[in-house]
Length: 218
Image (cartoon, rainbow, N blue to C red):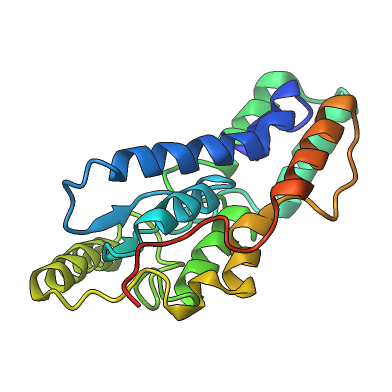
């Protein structure tokens, strides 16, 4: 789910649960033991954390993330604000507002601001889970296509040579990776309803090191 689309709607209460569903779906998909390597295709919001959490169960498989890269800029922020203000004042109709929104987010790729999708790409690159320099190359460019092909070739080469490093090294059972995976729970966000209060208590109880174990050889 996209947090940007569901903000202000009841579905926003399910944002972190959507991440857990993605993690479970990833683990189920990889559980068939039919794979030599894995390419992860996901960027926005809770998708990347879910993919990472699912992949942790299969750390022996060579795994790379393939980012989409950000879409090229559409309307400037100043112009977006101008149109929204005019709409709020009743000076333009809804069609003009929607035209501006469509021009702002107009193509494939991540949103054009520094939100969760772009920070996900940057963090994955810093963690060594995607090719260096691949985070912020626009879609539909020769370099983007070359990076995607290179990622596939690279992970296949690792699988063929049998020298695949663990997705997570020795630190996979340390507090660092516990923080990166399990402790994504919203500890700093206070519950806002009975529903989120229940979710809060359950996740507080389950957020401890060592609950997700990899199969990496030691």
